[in-house]
Image 1 (cartoon, rainbow, N blue to C red):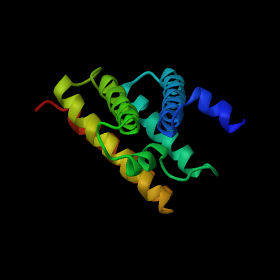
Image 2 (cartoon, rainbow, N blue to C red; image 1 turned 90 degrees about the vertical axis):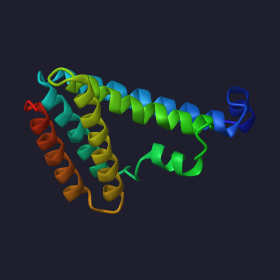
Image 3 (tube, one colour; image 1 turned 120 degrees about the vertical axis):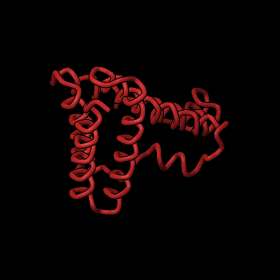
Image 4 (cartoon, rainbow, N blue to C red; image 1 turned 45 degrees about the horizontal axis):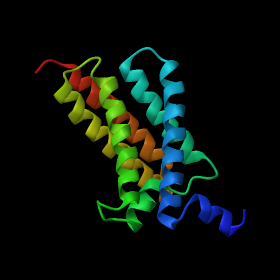
Length: 154
């Protein structure tokens, strides 16, 4: 594609980056939607999210998280790229929270979803450092242990 054609569609580099991030977020959401349909229980739906990350970490085109890379370059919370990254990460957290609300109170589901997101983000970083096997295995086990413990009455 010629540069001028691209600039007609995306007047700035930032707008192009936001569009790429939004496209990737939509693609990720569609993949998780399909996986969620495969299993009936909240615990298994969460496990599918971790399984998706396991496959991604092992794929030849894995080079870390595009969203984390973008955030490292555009750290201003008012910047459109920062906002696109926040939408995607908060969307994953909300997805997990919604799944967890099927079997635990909203406040607890919100807290557990935040912890699960941290596990995924940490595992993604470790995978980028060449430790995919242990990272995702430990993150998945910890996530399922946290969910099991959170189901118990307090």
